[in-house]
Picture 1 (cartoon, rainbow, N blue to C red):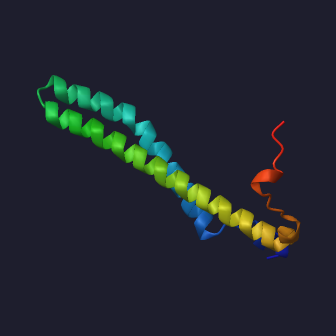
Picture 2 (cartoon, helix red, strand yellow):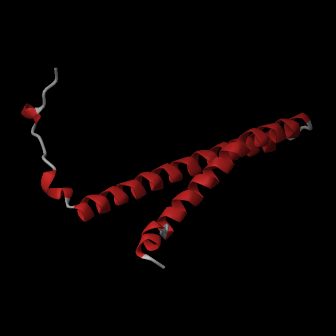
Picture 3 (cartoon, rainbow, N blue to C red):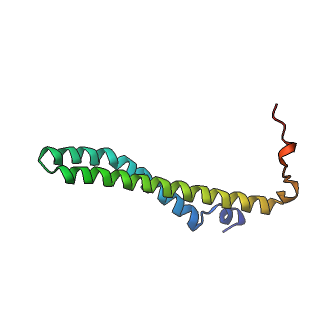
Length: 104
């Protein structure tokens, strides 16, 4: 492999973020299906089972979205930190104090 190829390959953390996003999309797409299945169950008299099915699908979808979002933000911060340290931008970053901001 050339140097260009090795730099372009995804690491395990990037693959994990992609897998989390795919799982979140699938679980969010399954919420309407669970709602329809829950309504059908409620029509046949299984009220609590239908509500539990719909509630569990919503909770699973929310959890998957939160996990995907947090892992994506964490991965992005890691990539930016690596880029900044690799390119040597640390010397050019200036932190301003409160009085140095101009709000016009």
